[in-house]
Image 1 (tube, rainbow, N blue to C red):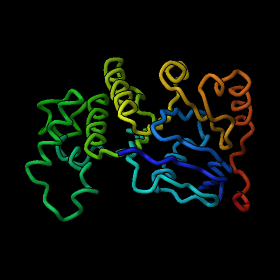
Image 2: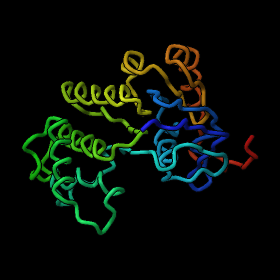
Image 3: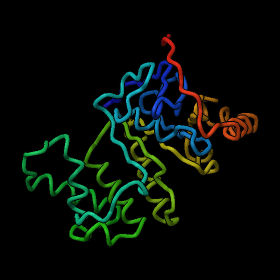
Length: 246
């Protein structure tokens, strides 16, 4: 289950040719635990989607991520109005393994029930996801990640708007994945949490302003530079011109 190194070479990702991530190069080492931080609009979620293969780069290369990744999107972007139970939501984690038309047997259902229990939702299998609190729903999404059993886990704001107990429980699961040798990349806003819990950090302001040991990246100078870059962003940025990757 050892993940491969994920390497980015001069990666540019745009929305309608407007730059979201600008010529980023670097690497996520196998088994690393990395926070992705930066101002709003810095391209953090776009970068995760590109790593997951959901947003094709306009230029550059992403190597080592294909087929390895499980993505937790922002909970706010998910529709909980669809009538699905907690068990069925977790069973979606077996999609790649079971495919679209294969029935999921007792073993798969047992794994899903065990995953729910592991995130503190024993007895919630039949509850509709629309009836859950924000913290309970996030636990369901973490249970789905458990079933996906991917060597690379991408988390987009996994602790946003959660109560302290839920955030602590889910953070413990993140550290469990890291301890198992998985590569974990998380978009976060709480810099105190990042300094305390994440050994590596990528500071993004569309451009990469720092990537490495957290203490070396989250300097006052780098944070000021990121803020100043964000304040200078145009509401209608120029289209990003392609350039050949190194």
